[in-house]
Image 1 (cartoon, helix red, strand yellow):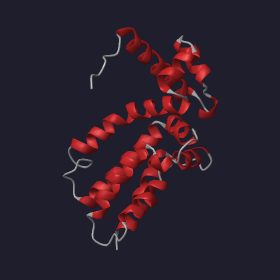
Image 2 (image 1 turned 30 degrees about the vertical axis):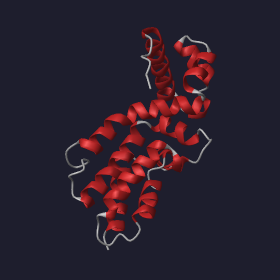
Image 3 (image 1 turned 180 degrees about the vertical axis):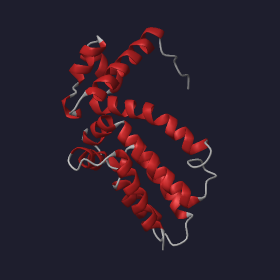
Length: 192
């Protein structure tokens, strides 16, 4: 099958759209309020261009999240300790959870927009499946963890964007305190 190279102007337009969308989500206090029309206006393109390129709002958000998560994915798949594959399992589980929480904290509104975008189950999303599989693999290497799949789901629930947002805005918990509490919770879960 032959792959067609994207035209230079199409690639440029795509980058302009992604930059505009990224900026809008970063500045928005309410991810729900960022519409495809807002993105099209900010990027200087028609709404039809966005829908042809990304399918829908959720598709656009998924592309933005995938771009943001790529450095983390590289660190987890090929990087050194504490995230890399050669790290002892317990240390890696704690590092993975911290990295996921930091990602959600650094990308709060975008992560919220993705979780809030509706559609298919969030547990079938590519990024969630990857996090779950990676965490589950590390958990399966730990003695005393009977069901690594369920444990991975339970630990990931503590990093949901809506929970992170609630803790930050309603309970005024600092990022450092969230990271500390997650690490303590995970350590207690992992210790038989």
